[in-house]
Image (cartoon, rainbow, N blue to C red; front, top):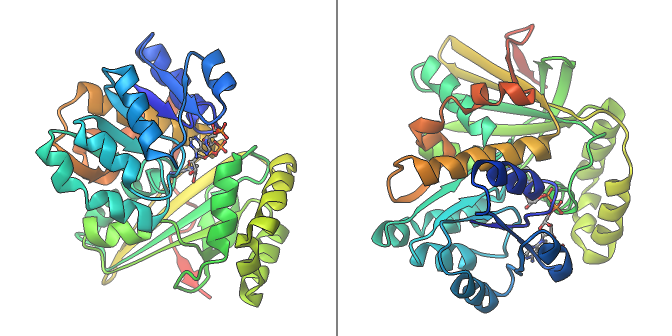
Length: 337
Ligand SMILES: NC(=O)c1ccc[n+]([C@@H]2O[C@H](COP(=O)([O-])OP(=O)(O)OC[C@H]3O[C@@H](n4cnc5c(N)ncnc54)[C@H](OP(=O)(O)O)[C@@H]3O)[C@@H](O)[C@H]2O)c1
């Protein structure tokens, strides 16, 4: 199986975990040919579809492609699925996931399965959202809250994604809620793809995902910057590149993350939450489990999001050995403010 981005913060865990489960069958890939070859891998650049096609030809029998870096469009997914090869994608950009979802007919016609919304957010958020949605008999409103640790060494690509997303408008109001292990926090609307996908896959009417960081001052500073409209300037390559590099080196807080989902229907209210540490590593573990399910289970051909595969519904419990803990928040409430 070809793990693209296979030596990055997410991809290294994917390559190592799949390598332990399927010895000799993992090919890590990235743009740095020397680094990829040292790991027994190959050079791949997801912005070059023709070269990607040639790599698949040269490797021959590829059982699955795991994308641990976001391509600019759905071209790489199309090439993969048209060859009947399984695809797992950790992308978190709604526009990209929509474009890959549109390939469902192509995938089915070639007997291939693709799994999207794989990771922590999207990923574990989608799985908890499904539980909460079912617990209230179909949510009218879902509030998904994430807390990320500023002390984790986040990958450069994930940091770039986050800074770019900060420049985008995300509908919804800030929300004060209790996050296990972190007390009451204010979280701010953020354009993670799960809120977009879940409206469709769960038929939930109103879904909002919000973000805060373990550092309260940094959360306040970041979203104050967003309110000024200056965060749009972060998307400019001249600003984004050095800022990503600087943030990659700075570590302010811890490496713990928390996820909380509140589902409401009339006066019914269900809450599911979990905590873990190192969201990049946990994203990699989710991707490895998802890939194993595509290889050894019997998922239907087509393009699916993680919450649509019943075989992965208990994935949060499967990650207990890796420090992921399902928790009961101290307070049930959650207030807009
Ligand atoms: N779903 C989730 O919860 C979740 C969580 C975290 C991250 N993510 C997503 O996962 C992706 C990776 O994040 P990360 O933290 O692992 O970043 P990272 O540490 O920067 O890793 C990115 C990897 O991709 C490679 N790469 C970059 N551009 C490439 C290209 N054009 N073609 C082929 N390979 C390329 C990099 O190596 P070279 O530079 O040598 O090519 C590196 O190995 C991001 O897109 C992020 O948004 C999703």
